[in-house]
Image 1: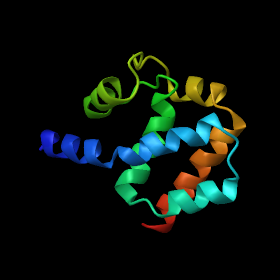
Image 2: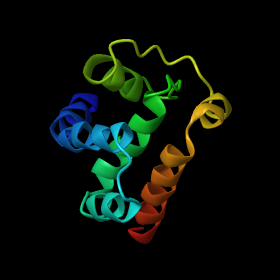
Image 3: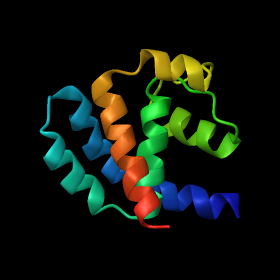
Length: 108
């Protein structure tokens, strides 16, 4: 079963790759919201977790740790806590994270 989830994450990862551009440029938040709003719940989950992986968040599940170690961050080592990551996230990243959470909650 883990392999099936892993394969799904790999296929969905293209949106995370596209999402990296959000962090490299000052995108208009309205445009960011439009892009996020077309993602599936699963893709939003990947994107949300990617935001934490960018800062070496230590995920509770080995699946997420392996996923980000192998596909996104060659220097990912999963050593930081949630509080540590939140303290170093930019306001821009926090705004995007809040958008993702808002969209996920709308789809419950």
